[in-house]
Each structure stands twice: as structure tokens, then as C-alpha cells.
Length: 198
Ligand SMILES: C[S@@+](CC[C@H](N)C(=O)[O-])C[C@H]1O[C@@H](n2cnc3c(N)ncnc32)[C@H](O)[C@@H]1O
Image 1 (cartoon, rainbow, N blue to C red):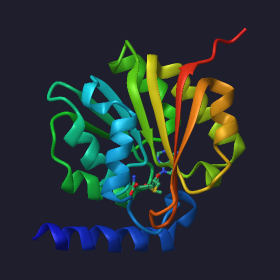
Image 2 (image 1 turned 60 degrees about the horizontal axis):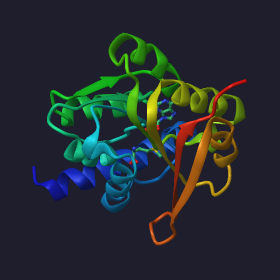
Image 3 (image 1 turned 120 degrees about the vertical axis):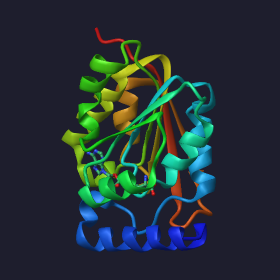
Image 4 (image 1 turned 60 degrees about the vertical axis):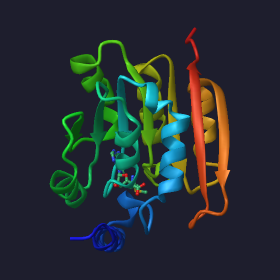
């Protein structure tokens, strides 16, 4: 199968998944390569030893993260939608990659078992605005608790305002990087410097 045919199939799988379960999938098409590469750069993935990806879907961002990750780096991917888990099992073959059919909220369990120093970066494209306030607060807090000092959280969002207040609760530095020319227009938010709790 040519790369172009594979891409077309991934797009078709993605659209079907959105129609079946829009609330979990949260987008009609995979993320573009340009945005995926930017996420890898913002997360400093080229210097990382351990990263986590939330919501790999059909692997559009995953591929760019693995391309940037050093040869001795490792990556754990958290995906809840079973057809996407099957798709990734079939298409991603990389010894640095561990696929988990689990929620992003479980990142702490994986960090305690396998990444004692914490993750260098967490790269997310899960639809926080559809997950809602309580689930978002739980996941953002879990990210902050499981990054190494100086680690970076990078989150792709289509909703322009939902996520930022939750990032500000946990991180000292929160930045917005809009991509209005992407289809659909995309916002990349970053969080760094975990706030100390008093
Ligand atoms: C907008 S899609 C992004 C897919 C892919 N990363 C891309 O950018 O093309 C959101 C993905 O997040 C997954 N997802 C939603 N809630 C999740 C959760 N709590 N934990 C892990 N994955 C989740 C969905 O199944 C879907 O694959």
C-alpha cells in the first residue's frame, strides 16, 4: 500500500470514528504534519528520554513524535477508543513505543511503575472541552504531578478558551500558540513550571 493510500484510509477511519463517537474523538480529521511537528518542537521531544502522548488516534502526531525522539527515548501512548488502539497496533512498530488502552488520567500509575524521574514532556490532543471541567482538572493535575522538574505540557485544542484556566491552576508559565490557517483552526497551549501547593 502506498503512503498516500494509507493516509487516505486513516482519514476515512477517523471520520467514521467521529460519526460513531464524536464526544470521545473530538475532531473530524487527523492533525496536520506541520502542527504535529510544532508540538514535538514545543515539547523538546528531540532531547527527551521519556514522553507521554494522550489521544494518539490514528497516529498523526505519534509519527512526528517518534521521528523527533532520540534513539534511546521512550514513549507511552494513552488511547481510550478501541478501534484507534487496534489501528495503532497494526501500524506503529517501534521498540520505543508502548501503547496503553487507558485514559490519560492514569498517567501517574505508569510514571510510578516505569518512569521514576517523571516525564520530560506530555503531548496531548484529547478534547478537554468535551471531557468537561472535572475530568479536565483531574487530568491536568495528573500531568503536573508526573512531569519532571522543567518538563513541558503541550496541548492541542480546537476550543479557543476552555483549557487555559485549568493550566493556570497548575503551571507558572502558560503560553498560547494559535494556528488559524490550519483546518480546523488550532490552538497549541503549553504549560511549564509546576505551581507549588501551599
Ligand atoms: C482530536 S482526536 C486526536 C487524534 C490524533 N492525535 C490526531 O491529532 O490526529 C482525540 C483523541 O483523544 C482520544 N481520547 C479522548 N479522551 C481520552 C482520554 N481520556 N484518554 C486518552 N485518550 C482519549 C480519542 O479517542 C481520540 O483518539
